[in-house]
Length: 313
Image (cartoon, rainbow, N blue to C red; front, side, top):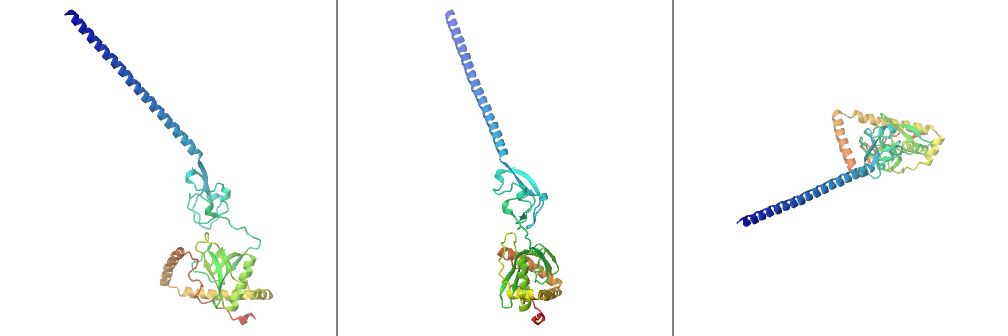
């Protein structure tokens, strides 16, 4: 009986020892797994942080510098150094033709209206042609101008004969100044001679000289002058310089008379109707892409009446 009890006790002790050993082994194994998992997590976080740092450094290396206007720039306006500001932005947000140097912008002209803080690109700019030695400012009061004409508008000057023939005398000229019916244009020597020939032609043959505005002058190419200067008229001008003054004076008086007539007939009601038609015209012109101005003498208007040619003789 005593031996049985001792044997039973040994078995119990052995079972307890085995259980304790198994528990220690299991605990050790679990701890090892947890420790390994923690090390893997820490290593993963370290790699993640390293990748973020690398990407930040790489992104910082891909930033570019560009130029923006500090104010709104109108289409056709020349840009100066005081209009520009240097900025930085990610390279993936910049167009391929962005302008790097301020010198590439200074003195150039905006093709379209530029809003403040717009990144400047080559496609938004064009360079003004250098002034030649024969350029002169010419005041003109004998050309029939559109009611909507204003300073800095760009025009073609045309001549229309009673036969219906219509020619371009001056192409894509900017109105430098405008006072009442007198505008100032910058012309070359060849353009001055061509215009002088057209003036005398209009005076002799009761033709009409009028102007048409461009719709988008910064985007539209200039028309090609088609008026053939009359050699006989140029000889007449050379022989009698006063004929040009008389022709200009006659056309100016007629042009002003027509303007006064139109203005006197303009009542508040017709003025309101005119403003409405102007809005419709601008909308239709932008949709059609034409450069014909209302009030121009394109086809149906009566030619400017000239003084009798006997006055020349």
